[in-house]
Image (cartoon, rainbow, N blue to C red; front, side, top):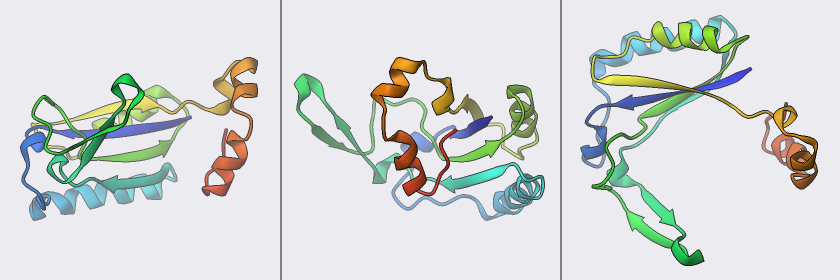
Length: 141
């Protein structure tokens, strides 16, 4: 079962462009990342620049509209993520609990929808999805 662990750092929604993590926090986080890798559960991980460097595309009335960051109405934003492959939701939670996060950080855990989870009609509607995943370097499950 694949899960995304989404890091939500408090205050990151107001971070200035170019804001980087604290150097003291990086060491313990790298050790945690190595533990995930050594356990064979880590599939991918990345940190994200603050929303002040991002953009949003909304589709009101079917027309794309671009809004540059920061986004004042936002209360929580993603600071990064891990993609892990574990046996259960409980195992994903246990991994998240081991993260050396600070008291102003939260990790949200979300299971990835696997192709096999979809009912037959959705599998037919998404014909080509498996090939698209494989072309992107991922195996659809």
